[in-house]
Image (cartoon, rainbow, N blue to C red; front, side, top):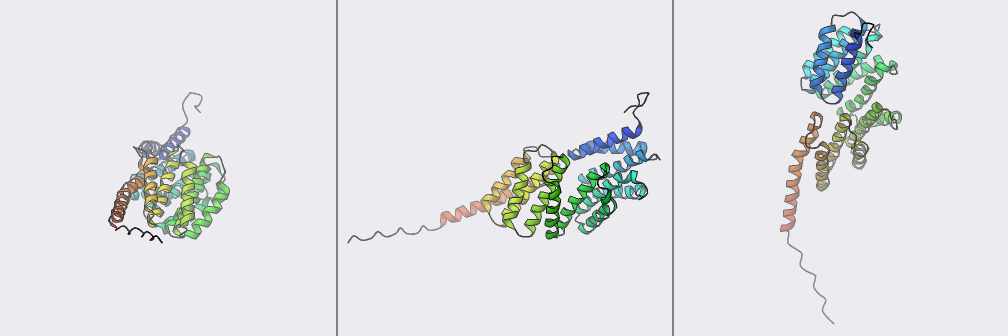
Length: 308
């Protein structure tokens, strides 16, 4: 709110810019988030005011996450290092939100780099630090996101039993909520549950679980939910390909392309590229099978019984 002279206080301006940056990132528009982070960092990095220090910490964390989406993983880790070095203190709870975002995004980047043990370590540290304060409004979102990130780390580390049991436990608290954030967390937990079932070799249950994500969220306009549905469709196609259910796999690949539409965003590119490549492979395999079937000699007709 503007002060008596009409000027917006700097801490309010900085928070509004960081809230906008996060909104851009959620929409997949990371190019629009980066300049906002740069501006807040440049203008307020030397401030001693805790409210502005918090926004500088968020700027570093959000910028790190944004450039990681552009493939600059190691540069992103430098950003997270600075958040940890400058702003973490158990005696400064007013800065914990920024530190929590830095830890969460660091863990995600480490998972993208296939450094699952390090990812799990950071998630454990984050939940140990902030789990008891998870009901604070400023910490609730990053802490709950860390809990679902743990599921992804378990699956990448092939700890499928842990991923399955923990996803089902989280779903007891999430499922049925109308809170948009918890709706998204429900989708994440359902997806990780499906991946765990796939890893355990429970083919039918995994297919049903991937289908559930699609059925629930395929019409959702939110970019994050659209990306989760694409990943679920890709998971379903992978199961069908491994089981050599080729016609069904072809339909699943078509569903990925249909869901993404003609102009898929960055977060949908991996499933789309997967679908395009495997679509050609499966079509060739089906054509070969059809040609083999056509070349097989037909069995002779049954002899008619002789009249008595």
